[in-house]
Image 1 (spheres, one colour):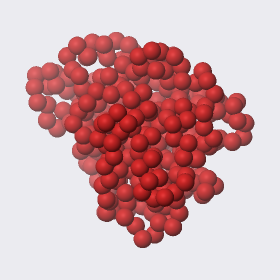
Image 2 (image 1 turned 60 degrees about the vertical axis):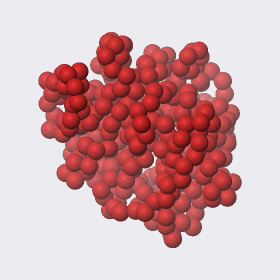
Image 3 (image 1 turned 60 degrees about the horizontal axis):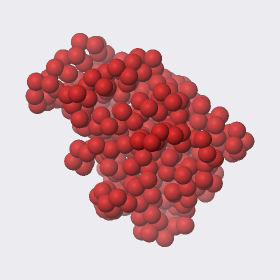
Length: 337
């Protein structure tokens, strides 16, 4: 689907240069909705080559659509980051910029994966009080991974970190040196699914499935080809952080330790959690644990959706997501207005 966006740069609170993509639409009669991408991709991950993607669905529903490119976006030069930096510096500045440009007093957000974990930290720390409804996909405050992924985090990440600062699924298209070619050969030997080499690199990097981030039957050929160009560099610094979080059972500070969920959230936001039951990157238990945590604090306020036959990212670019997923999200946005 072809959309026209204006690019609005903003400076993170520590000086990192990020940007927002704002959909130019004459149909925007409702408030702003901010979409936040995950690790190793960019905001374009929400814009697959489908006439019925989430951006189109939000536009048709009348929302003012904004997409954030935080420091982990692959449109920026590779840089080492952790969730604390993104939560404390990038998201608050992005929300402030949307408020500044629109004049809205409140906004809503749809967040995914590490955009979700970091945005949730921003919210529970009280750094983005303007965000009144947050729809989170895949993982929020309590990351739970498959057993094989925990082995990779505890064994392979320290080993790989000796040789690389970044992993890059683009090696599936062009491995630039001996080290990356060796890594690609390992992926070829261990992943036999009928996916592209980039897709196999993605599964090796982020999960324990074949594939890990989508169900192949949910992806049409056009989208499968498009995916190859939407993943790139991700720093090992992120994996070191998420390893600590997985080991703890909830998000922790990168340097000083300490569980982010030990104190009550400093936010009035309502949270709506989505999880694909077939997710082999972060298990559905991740969202179930966060829902249980939030529901104990504010019974009946928040909501959890467990999606049959969906995984991690096909929630957004699955060929039938416009029929089974987006209506649920938009219904929650309508209730949040």
